[in-house]
Image (cartoon, rainbow, N blue to C red; front, side, top):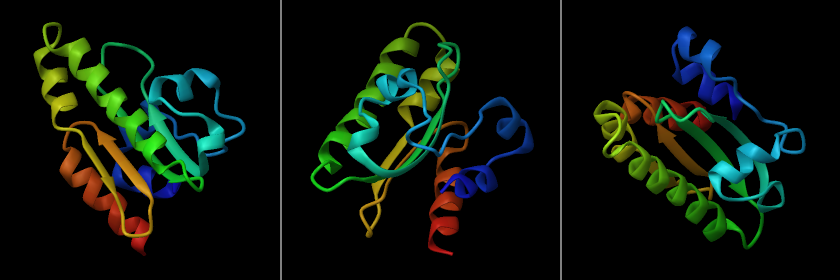
Length: 131
């Protein structure tokens, strides 16, 4: 899943925003930001900005059994928080947050993409996951 994220981004984004994919090693701060815990997912890859000057986050998660609603609600809350943070602060970042994609794929994988060109990045991630 991490490869799906890195292959969908530019080299600059890959340098600026590391991808974490060892769910046990991901720091609690990242889980707090996305609104769920390591126990809520069987597999995950995430790249999220903890600095509040960029509306940025990409998460691919395979929810644990019975946890899909928790994961999706957490990611929707992340999107809502970013929209609220940037609505009157940075107009360009608000547009990015507002245009975030949050979808559940046919296999149950949940994909959230909040970045510039979110549609293109989302499509590239979905294609990479299907390959």
